[in-house]
Length: 125
Image (spheres, rainbow, N blue to C red):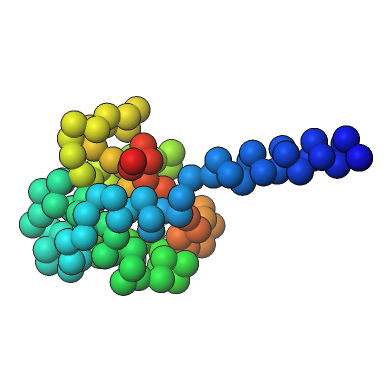
């Protein structure tokens, strides 16, 4: 019985501490409407405000890294591999190992190029 209780507490701790979904994190950056044209001319800060709208408009699992580059332009950041388009967005007062601003990283499958995940680093609070 104690083993079962320990397992339940461990699972509760693991799931209770997981970060909110990326779309919820993106809401914290702002609510500016995304368009390819607006993104192309926007500052890093304004781009951060468009992330939630972008994520809401696009089914990321149907996109490839090439599609992301077509929509968002040349990546402005780097996340692990060249196949993963990444963009610094939001306030430059936020810093991480990736630079000044939040890193919006699209994780792509290396063989197919399909987007398999999205991360915002560091997690907006």
